[in-house]
Amino acid sequence: MLKGRFVIFGLVVAAMLGLAATAWGYDTPTISGHVWLDANGNGVFDEGPSAALESVRVIFYRDYDCNGVIDGADEMFDYDYTDTAGFYLVVNAYYCYVGYLDPATVPAGLEYSTAPTQSVITGAHDVVDVNFGLKQPDPYNVVCPEEVSFWKKEFKKNKTFSAAELAEIVKAALSMQTVFTTRAQIVDVLNGADEPYEKAERQFATLTLNLAVAEVHDQVGYQMGLEPDDALSLKKLTAAKFVGDAYIQVEAMILSQSNLTLAKKIAKSINQGEGLQLNCE
Picture 1 (tube, helix red, strand yellow):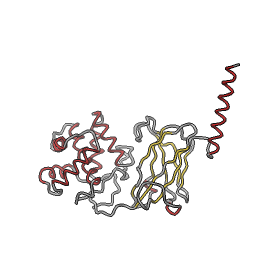
Picture 2 (cartoon, rainbow, N blue to C red):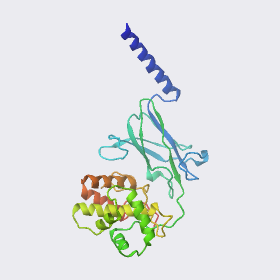
Picture 3 (cartoon, rainbow, N blue to C red):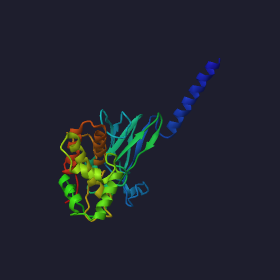
Picture 4 (cartoon, one colour):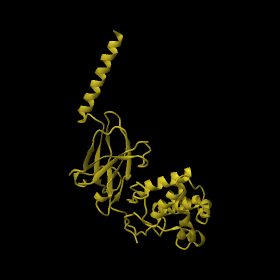
């Protein structure tokens, strides 16, 4: 008799959960949100309907290892185009996912005010809100990323940056990764040998410095446009859709000392401006 009561209680709870999900309008785990023009650039969806961006494709990949990055066996799960209100909807999304905007459908000249890729984990009846904000770019002149030779000369002669500016760049570079912990390590790698590990590290150090310049652009005069949320297309080398995702992938390869040739190729390609859609000189 007691067992029967537990069964009945379980059925009642399940029914209540189903009613709760229905009350929200969905009976399956759902990911939805808005894509909008973030006029104040604060990354918060606080503008009105006029800020909506229509016909932007929002793509979600199934993140099988739940690491927040599109890699390995991850595959496209579903996508939707935003409507006139900038709204999109993806249903039956029960698991870990990574979402991003299709660069081909993003209005030209805009940059992200939110993270360009966003990870989400859904439960059985969750309704998860994931918004993507886009804004007008900051009004500063930029140059494309530099290669290894530029940075080798810079650490020797301070030709482009002052000593104080280079110190700020190095500070930012050390804070954004775990491969290098000191300035001396970066300098040694830039001038190091040509073994596979050193080659991968050299290109990674160069990529890190290129990203660091954009991070501290308010403090330096020579400003590069390479940022983590820049769209990337290196289909023969990586599935990463943005520079930041490729950067994380390269760092992981170096830390694990695996796929070093691939790590070098990805970093070097970005340093040479391949696969990028940068508005720079």
